[in-house]
Image (cartoon, rainbow, N blue to C red; front, top):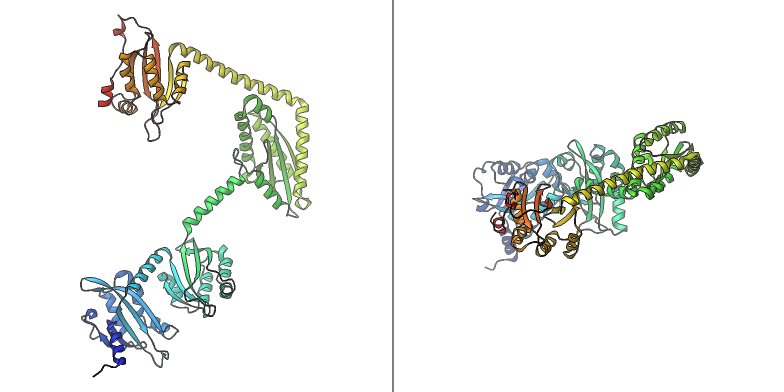
Length: 592
């Protein structure tokens, strides 16, 4: 007899299922329509409720632990009834379950007829082996779950949601109790889960009517909002993203909602942003606010009305003379000293360096009399270093214009500066500069005298970095400078030229050994304990003793040594009496 197409379809579909059960979701009563031996469990025959049946599967360890939470929801009658009697006519959940000695991917689902209700509470529970597309999707969701702590599918048109992933706390507190996404968002704010400063932005972003309009009218691909949410006892920055689902239509606005923790990366972004802002707003030398910040703040201060503003305008006396006589380093020292003193007496955020030698302090809290009193102390401190300033102080109502107040303070400073120079300030400054210059020249004279003295006793004194092959000298003869230029300032190459040109041939191997830096480093760090010496003869007959000492300990970046060349004349008959120290050959250096 020919098989009917109906029987063929029925049998083919049934083959795809491992288990099929007809279930009354109100009572839990069930009976199996198909029960594959692969899925058969021992000891389940007397269980009369499907809810207890699912619970026992979990208790028996048949469900892989990471999927237990999601699967166990279907042992809760209230949860199943709410979904089935709502709009979820098809419910699907994939998980791994134990089969013999291994695990297999299983898709569990519930299908209910359109007229399913409390009067007609019968639905179909099914279990089937998951196909490759399903396992791929679950793997993708697992990856997303590691990134996002909440994933929802929401429908703006119906104001409903479907949970893909949420924490157990939010599931119990919101998902299991509420049906409308707008209610969830509203209660989330009201229950203190959003930081007080972010509440208005959060409410505006999650306004369902606004979202409907934005996605419908603007044809946007995504919307995002950053806010602080409560995690334990602390608030952390999170980012909510809304993206249209593949099901999205203007008449059926289905979106996917993702929320992830961005706390650490956002704080890093804020720090980088602040560093850039500081670079724009801070004076590089004094680290005070600069003219850019001064202009911005003065503009804001000009918008005030009934508040007082006090301005202190400062000009440092003698900066140009100091730069010209003693150099810009001395001028920088002066400016930093003035800045540091102002920071000690006034709030740092109120002080600005607005030009080369000009500083301004702006305050809405200090009176003119108070500032004038503080200025006396500032001047006294600066005089300890022979620094002097000209100042002007003015105040008034901000509604009269902050710019006019600053202008009046600057004018007062100009008059103070004229008085300073008129009352022999220029002569005093010149005298101080001459004293400083005399000290500098005296120090330079002593240094030159020192070099004159050691030039008679030493043929050269060099600091050599063996890692970089570079040299800094205390004393260097003219001829070695020429060798350095020829060697492109590589010390080892300059020494090789020196050895070939100025050292007797029989002593050349001995000296060549010390410019093998690897061998030299090894000897200094082990056997020589940071101090090596040797004697060699030059072609002019003079003997030179060379001593090499560690300056700083060896690191991956540098290894600094000092090389001291002492030139002496010895008679051939008493040369043997000279203490040559620990001399070593090239072969010894290589052998260690």
